[in-house]
Length: 345
Ligand code: NAP
Image (cartoon, rainbow, N blue to C red):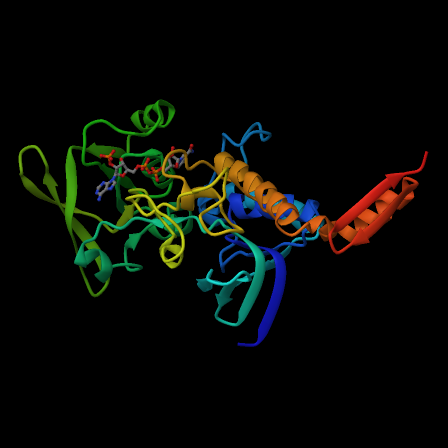
């Protein structure tokens, strides 16, 4: 290990939740360190267009949205580290966060580690992962120009992927296990208008077929009739939701039955004092960029209040706050117990 960092606030995760937490904590002069992983922006960075984040009429790309929040946080002094957290230890009062090259001793930790693509769980999916099996149309769609692709899933993500791919691939088969889709009506209406998207329901992919050169087809079973068919395809995009990236926290923090982290105290507080949860890792219900950003804000405010309340940490903001207050002609005394302010009459 080469580097040790102490910080008042360490944020784990570089999506809208982590970046917004960094923005609020930085603006509160807590000098947060945000460990953002190797791919900044989180899941939203893979969205080609986000139409529903307030403040961006006409839409914005997910990558641009993430970059804007990150820059805003950076402008207030947040530090970002491009590395993956590999473990945490919340047994001591100083909370430890460990990456491959560094460790961090934090007074508070905001867990905003997000969620990862859910897999079909087929052996053939593993076999062809990266050789025709993909989880992100924005990232891998261009490899399938004028080829045939299958998209699996029935939510907004699957339908968005099918739409994006229909502009690149020659044909798209959207395979969903039920006849009703979860995806919103606007997206479904757009699918109806694309002549090269074929919807196959209620059906599941039971096997991905291929050889040395990659995927050549899928075996599909109709869940009502049990009938099996084979469909030729060059690629399979799996878009069946996400699982929370909560594994490394489960020794310390509570989870629900799906593995989402649960806040156990007020607001975003968990059962470990000084540890807060934000974004998709703790949200089985909404999972929107805007709700993730909002919970990042809440977690940063909770962390700030916890620091202030826990150790009389008004001293936190001592130097710069003192300067500001002095400039406003106030008398400021900083003691171990906190900061006393008496305005001149
Ligand atoms: P989701 O809404 O949970 O949908 C997952 C889909 O995959 C469901 O249709 C589900 O089928 C299917 N599925 C799950 N496990 C499966 C399995 N093992 N085999 C086959 N099918 C399986 O997930 P999402 O589409 O990733 O969306 C997540 C959240 O992000 C949602 O809140 C969504 O609104 C949001 N989102 C929004 C946008 C946008 O607004 N532009 C874009 C993307 C995502 P069932 O329906 O049968 O359960």
